[in-house]
Image (cartoon, rainbow, N blue to C red; front, side, top):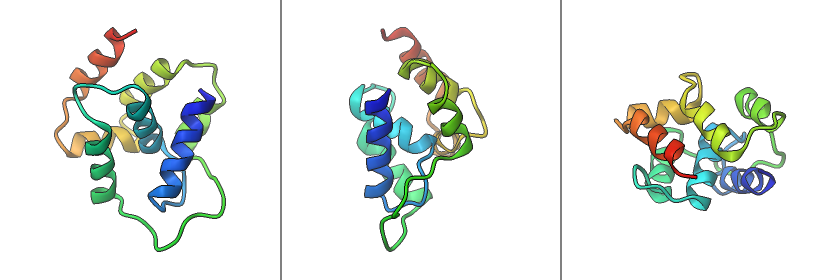
Length: 114
């Protein structure tokens, strides 16, 4: 899990966004565990389109409440991603929904893989 959170932080910094959220965690997950339903590059493009970026990199690492709760839990990466995909309040869920990605198909793909 530490590696995924480190990757999520790097994605947040690279995208020049002010917080580490579920979208960055999903992006990190896709980088480490490629999926058929959606690729790392496609989801990163969606984040840029919908959220955009700042003019400068953040000087501190802040987590959204949902991701902070996941970080403080003992969930596995798979359990964490499945909980994000089950939470309509997560930014990752809403990005996928807005781009007409079949969340149930994505959930099932992750759930059936290891």
